[in-house]
Image 1 (cartoon, one colour):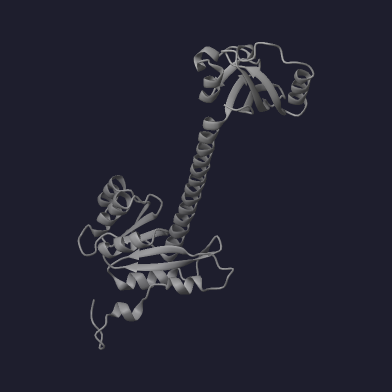
Image 2 (tube, rainbow, N blue to C red):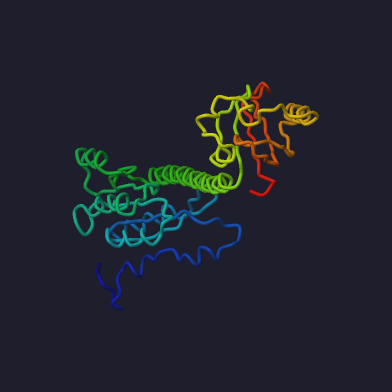
Length: 297
């Protein structure tokens, strides 16, 4: 890069990266901008690209530009700025394959599979293009002379749309993982302190957690497929039985206390809650009961 009279470079005079502090200091209604990294050793490409896209907005968010002039410089920016949506990447910079090296580093070293990578080359060639598209995880490939302002706009918007979809899917997956983690933690607490019994629509046991099996004195395998008499041999007393059946049928749930016995004959007092799960036609297909002991263990 040639030096100017003050000892600086033309790049310093012509182009600066958007200041993140300025971006977030904008009006409160402004959304966080889409971050686009321009990687090219030709400063004119940076200037022209930024000028062509300067007034572009997508989904109400404007564009913010970061600039790198070598593959190594771009990799450092990618490491420091994880929310870059699009990389407009030159192929030939400090080395003939600097852009291809960077594309591979982004995907493999950084593990970033969301950012969209659009290669731009000043060395057109169909064989080269086909080989790169097959061998590298990129999203588009353009010869610079073919990438008009209109085509650049279309490429950028389609890339941002794809990135937005991937980001939304990633956020949804993370939310599901968080919910699953919370459910697993809750389940661990329930498994440790509560007695859980699952029955099918006909009242046959389909599952019993370890705490229930230990208290009852049965193995899980011995209980599967049997009815409630395996755990409570005597009929439920009236009016408890009527109350339980009517509550499950009318409201889909029941809560109350039950006196029963273990397989060894020891008396047990339980506080129970039972739920009925129905299909689209309203027919119960599963019952789940959760209980805790009221008497000292």
